[in-house]
Length: 121
Ligand SMILES: [Cu+2]
Image: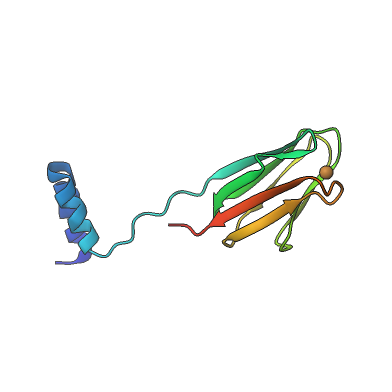
């Protein structure tokens, strides 16, 4: 009996017996489905990143929205991205690796955020 067949049986078991079915799936050594990639919106407003601490996963997109009347950047301390946004503009960064990155605005060094990127799954 192949792994796929076991999975089908296990799914039926989940319907019937809940925990028992879950154990059967675990025994098949199939990884749990990875959470879907998400989009996290970060606003630049009143000379600050909001939120100031951003939690995301590899593969997620950070959607930067500049709601200020000034030009801002979202510049990564590890130089993995540098998004330059005029007043009212928005832009996206797709996160490609895990790690903790300090984000600053090149024009306003007091604007900082902490971006924590976790591995998927
Ligand atoms: Cu700025």
